[in-house]
Length: 390
Image (cartoon, rainbow, N blue to C red; front, side, top):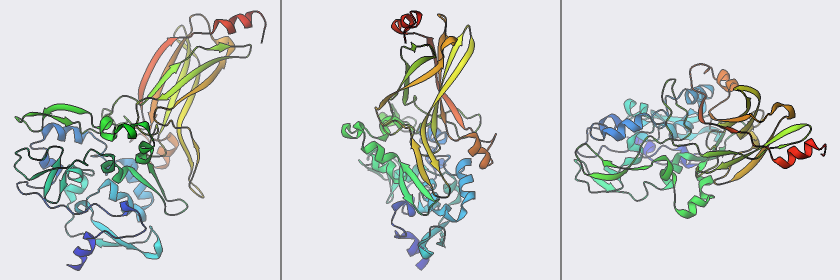
């Protein structure tokens, strides 16, 4: 009984809220359980969307499993976001020895539900509280107690896991700063939160045969990179826009300006995992043949040893615009030259995948944009070149 009481309490371990799981939740009256598979009996379409989401894959994700295997003594920290409910956690940290995150004092949780644990960020994480099923409406005539929660669609709900920054040791760091990035953006002042993009509104019945209401998609589209080979990417449009501007030419190079803009993301682009980045490839094409390729990388770069530190950050803030100039060989262009732009979201590099033994097992990237247009060179620079001026 004492052990049960201890693991139900919030324990101040090292001072961060994510070091504790969310409180244990009882099954509301009228429900068989709080497992997603039981929610899906009635909420069929929402359940189907959730099953494709990164939330549903948060525990079995191969990259996450590889990270936990690499540092098993600190996995209890990560599990509090990847399996957030106390109902899901098999061994709960109630203290640490010597103020070390690598030396937790773990207590067995007698009420842990293995099926619920495997559902990772499951329905109940957001929708079950104090014996009620919480949602945007409240009284819907459901066969279980319901309660309206105005905070459900606020950024604070998402920030419980998507805002975690801390340095536990020189090499053990959390760097998820998405909510803070949003709070500094123009969207925060407009009251447009995470759900505006990641849970687009749709009119449909909550349950089969029910009245049509404004609900939200539950596929939580984000980076658009699938979690398993062959799985379609879930996501919205790319947050990045790419525009090729008028080129200039001199005796030594063809200079093509590329305008980049974080046009649609309410946070830095990309956000989250520091290994995520965006690769933009620009091809110079003559008669269908690629003559030359240049590329840009948008993202963070970290040095992980002997001390974790960020050494570069080329991400774009919300609505930020930046122009990069790519230099191609001066003689490669002709009046028929075309430019092809390919934008790829990258989860991790080939080197990182090899280090984690994920090569060939895990989708590393997804192409999210591709377009082609004619090369336009400023007449002024062409005439200067022809006249011999520099």
